[in-house]
Length: 396
Image 1: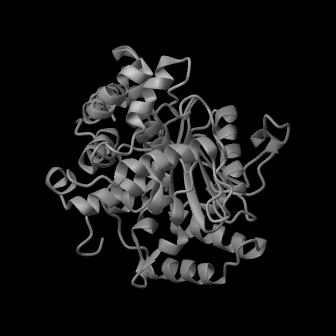
Image 2 (image 1 turned 180 degrees about the horizontal axis):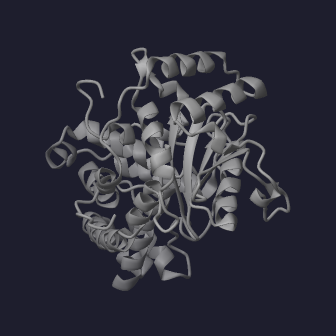
């Protein structure tokens, strides 16, 4: 590890979806650093990356051989490069799903590798379907982890019965100042013979053990999120007091209706944050990220606050109108070529209506007012409650 790099920066350098491994578990299962990649392998992967042409089978095969066997150190004698029908699973659409390669050690621990040369980006557009097929295969085959790549992105995927998570490396980030960077270290640390296999069939490999231990802490984290949602709801109600008082007589809603409506507003934020984290919304679209997205808004408020949100943001009011515009975007969608968004509709994002028969829909109007609306400091605090936690997790 080069001077100036923080411990486990190889993990934070990756792109993540869901919770694959809890940061608190890294030091129990993985080293903080790894010896530099030897010069021969460094030059070999640099050469094959330079020669790699997206969509070209031959150059992709050379790159796969180099990365999987030379960089990760997975013995070529343990690879099945044309796995048999026992590795096939029938998809819900009726097609057969089968990995391109499978590494299997002496104790039957396996790493299936799925290769899709014709997708530009994993998880985006056609690449979303490919990732979904790998998740489906993992569940049907009862396997814990798979690797999916198109030659550019290398995504480690884990799928449970009702969830999935991943961590992704991008070859554009593999070399830093001419030398293998933290993303190369990440693949070498996570995917090597000692983390993918064990000396016994009774003992889980350390990669799977780390994932399993991380999942055990989710119940505690869920309880913490529930408490933070409650606090966010109460903050929203306090910040909307003027609008509530103004509309109460006209809209005719009870305090219970109001509380449910506030919950609906906060749950909109939770769902959007989840969708952005899973790339179900176009975070990579600059228009969406800078003008609508919640992660983009949080980053913007972070910069504006400079660590003093309460003092610097309490007299500004630009965040709430942006949030309301995001809700409308989710409900109505966008046909603009610069930012195509499907029309999601649904009750959760349906706007308030003073003439509605449902009192909760009428109460929603109190939280959909621009003037007066919650201050930027209040919006920042709501997003902070929904995205940050100080909980110390022992089991994940």
